[in-house]
Image 1 (cartoon, chains in turn blue, green):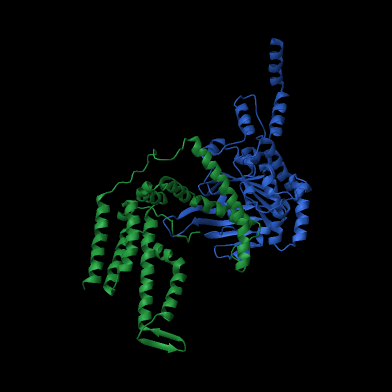
Image 2 (cartoon, rainbow over the protein chains, first blue to last red):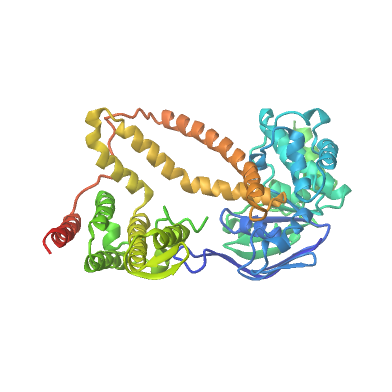
Length: 299
Length: 266
């Protein structure tokens, strides 16, 4: 499902002394099947955009196209409710939304709201557990006796079970340990690759953007200031820092390397693999090899 | 959530904003007593004048006060309705079966509307111009004499200010969880009363759990910073009486004398 923002403006509490315009003329397109990262410093309007992605908020002016549905300021709650099945949102710290007595019932909550019978919903819940790395033995356990990481998996299962075609993730790895972070990101990447799920990732982790995303949107003060592939956006290192963002370690490393004129790259290395390839290629270069041998004979 | 005007402070620097919170608290309660002392049309006019002058110098748009009245509109209507039907009076204007509407009933109904509007507006002035923490400080200061009766005033004040402090946090949290559950297909504004009550469960349980967690964390943070409570605590914000406060009390004193004399002399 394609998502398109057309001249979207959003103002909190318009017409009061608390009036606060947070989105200014936002235009962008998230293509079907893409992996889009939305980055921006705290307070840049990321969460407001996120809430527009499944019509939890409607634009003050302009329109948001969610597939064939146009969401404008005067849409009623009823007319947009069904779109939320198609666009699953995993909020920040999603474990806070758990409430049922058992994991199974909690996961089955979403589908039941969209008219699936309890029996069928529970069956789907059991099927979805392995996808998030848990097994069927969790079905009858209370979500509140699980560890933080397990609770988050249950909450994510509760969104995946609705079989959305777009998955929106708001800092899904916040508060997890490094191993948990990697597992979580591989899980989403797997869903993107195998089920062709469109993914929208809101994050501060530039490494995740470099490793997984194929499209990147940069926000600053409620305006879009960058829109393109991570490789082109990460070229502008100084500019990114000026808006309180960062580049991945790999990019930083590569940029340090090419300060020495004997190093160069054809394309900016984003992932660890690409960086390794670049270095191997450069080491094969005779000049570098010579230096290398000299060091060895000296030793 | 935006409709909940009570407890919504509007920043400003008007005469009313600068008053001591104790003055505002006492004046609001004093005003309620004044309303019940009013006995004739012109005394109501005096009180109404007092409310409007106070609202005017608070420099807050009148729409805020109207919004403050909206939630109570139903309550006012019901009271007026019963007043119209059951009020006893001699001047019958309309009689239809068991239903009699009298002139006295209509007058009483109008007076009740006036009283409601005045009380609500006066307390709205208090909450719009005073931060919740100021109110808590004011209450603590006003309750201080009760300490002699072994009432734990400081603890009550602490509970009060913690509760007030966490109202916005709790509202944010509520919105976040509501959003998360809406994203899972709940529509909170659909269905009959029973269905709606059922939908509150996925909201309340996460809220309770996060509140208990938060209380725990707060207790640890307070202990870590050496909170002991009791008499030896000093205040960051000292309350001080100024001339403004004396003028305000002076005005209320004058109105009281006026109303009393209207009642007993004229």
